[in-house]
Length: 328
Image (tube, helix red, strand yellow):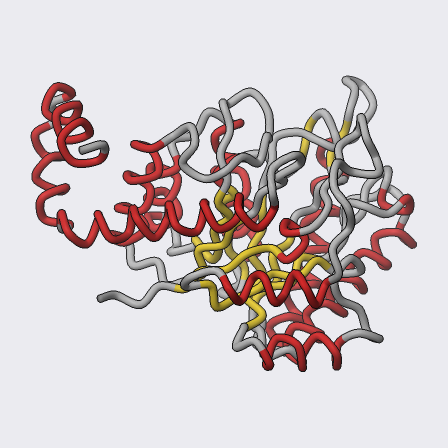
């Protein structure tokens, strides 16, 4: 059986809130309890931590001990460049040079902490870097600031032997984001020209951008082998709903996992959900088990059989395959 690495974002197990109920729909859960829950999910061996939410300079030692005690690795750290007032008008692409320096320093600090925890990956989502209205942003200048800031982060990370995965999302919290789709994020990564900078595909963000994630995976392979990380969730395509994996898009998930296998992806399969009303543990576990089930089915069917199906280019044959194999 092939060895694959499954991970979850720690906070997804706890209380999650939306803009309508800022206190959240559930009671808060202690971080140590969440780590214990994560370790009990079949096959989960990694935890993603959000900077300032889950980890900072004062808590590194305790977190390192807790992860070790439960046999968990730090799969990545997500710098918090999106949930503080100072980033409200931008972080890495802010018009305020002081804010840009602070954002770069925050990413670099998280790279250092990742190394302390035995990790080697920063998952960087610059969610506040974008704009909201027409005629209210200098696209050329702000994108240049973004590139310059990312270059600084990448140089520091390279010194620490840390990779940076750039995560895209079309909108929210801004109406337009500077990293919005696979293609423009790949363009940024390749423009930087550094081997330690690549892309994270959040499946829900890709669905929101009307992407077929299997094709996105192939694109990243074709233009530099730049798929560094994956976040898994589900939605209907109109909003970043962060639902249980596979609850909506079964065929797309099977296809994307095929392309990840085909292109030699060796990174983490990490769950990133916001179970607002669902039981967090149950929802995350269901997602992990779904991805594992699809992997088992992929191994059973075999890449050769799927490649033969693709070569037929026959939608009826594909529908037969879905009916008889995926939902049999």
